[in-house]
Image (tube, rainbow, N blue to C red; front, side):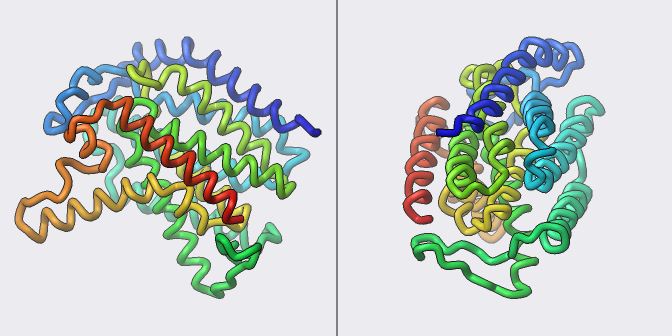
Length: 318
């Protein structure tokens, strides 16, 4: 049995754990503090002042660990690029919000334009540089692939940007995005190792980095990942799925992300159409469950268990 894939998990975990006591006080000193919406869940008001932008710990752990392997595993380059690219967009957004006190951070148009640029470079690399076709593995088909022709490119943009924003919306409770994503990354690691795809060092690095980060991010969190972390993780999930020709599987393993985005879209649309009525008590949907009386830890536990079961279903679907 080859245990080489255990080492990047341990390296990234170690880096993440060591960075915590160094980075968190720096963020606190730099006043990188979370502000809570006044109209938000009341119990969240006590979180105001918790340092955010902790995603730099995740990102640095992933990048350092991946760079140790990049020479022997060139296929991790596109995933690293997308993860880092979206992480930097998130960092810029957090920085403008928290340090420059620009409440919106990047304007939606700026954010979207930057996301398009990163995705376009990834799409170009995938088509022109790698020999990975844009055919999609069909779940439960016994290994059949679906060639959707030119539609594959617009679909890639929708899948990448949709996943990134899905993870971003999921990041609203202590440990929620980290817990869900560590399970998704574990699923991709199992597939990457099983198929000898050559991307396992980075999927392992994400597992390790998130496990380390969770030590500081579980309830009550001493640091939040901010957009720096959530956008980077979304980029990782989407690009890994494409490198494995498994974007359809994002719908299975990343169902929580999808439901979070859908709940916001449904809520906003319904609110506008009915002149102020709501379907959910609050969106994204994790806040709806909180306002139904669930504790924050219960929401995180249930969403994580659901994701774990979905990952097992996805393994059966390959």
